[in-house]
Figure (tube, one colour):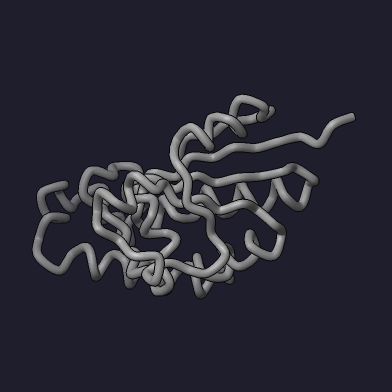
Length: 159
C-alpha cells in the first residue's frame, strides 16, 4: 500500500490562522502521511524567521472574547487603534496559560517530521521578499509544483 499524502495551501498570515496548517501537518506526519504545505500570499508570514503574527478581531465574529465582549462590544470597537495588539497579547497569554505550543514550536515540529514547507516563488517575487527573511530548509516553487503533489494526494486542504 502506498503512503497517504496530505497537501495544504496556507494563505493567511494572522496568529489564529497560523495554527491550523502546522497542527494538521504535524499530526498527519505523525500518522505517516507524506505532507506538504504550500505558503502563498499572506501565508508567507508563517515562514518568516521572526514572525510578528497578530490576531484580527475585526471581521472575525466567531472569536470568543474576554468578559463576553463579543456580546456587547460592537464590531466597530475592534477597529480602535491598538485593539489588534491588545487582542493579540490576550490571545498569546491565554495560549501560554493553556500550554498551547507557539507557532515557532509547531513549525519546528513540522520540520523535524519532514513536512515539506514550500514558499510560493511568485508571491515572494511579488512582495520583494528575500530568502534571508525566511527560516532555513524551505523550498521555493510555483503553483505547478504544488499541483503535481496535490494531484496525487489523498487529502487537500485550503487554509
